[in-house]
Length: 214
Image (cartoon, rainbow, N blue to C red; front, side, top):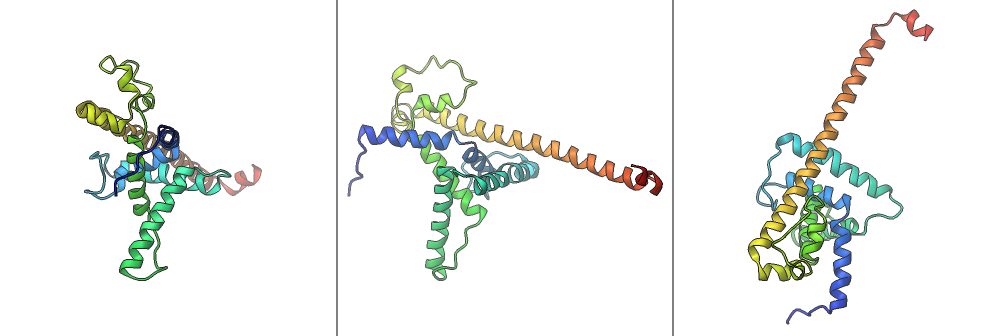
């Protein structure tokens, strides 16, 4: 059966939804964590920030996202769909290999779901939308107004080389920025931990009468 084509109105509605996904700080953080923490062969981008990058994104991007979404009055719809997809795939696998109701999805399931969800969203928005997510890019003389107004999936057919450069440039820079922020947060936390240790030693060093006087 041939795939049913979307009407222009349906494509535009889908584009708006996908832009909410691509603009979501929670999903961007989840995507970056997934890229660095998925095993080799499952991550779509080869970037090596070492153990520090993996741990920083996991602790200061992924975990806060889970905490925020679990407490939010209006959880991110895109994140909820990623969770549902991860849970469904885990359940279907368990049903096929073990038994119904034995599934529990892990962080890795969620990461795989996020990768597929995020990257499929890109093709449903326009070239200008993706460039708009990179405010550091001010000019693009080689692109016409017609190019900017094309959906990414259509632009790939017209100019695969430029499409690939935009796609890889956006995704790599996204992961680099998210990881950089996580590593900076990790460094600040390390300093606060050191402060606590130094103050704890100071408290222990005081004489009993000094502590009572305070």
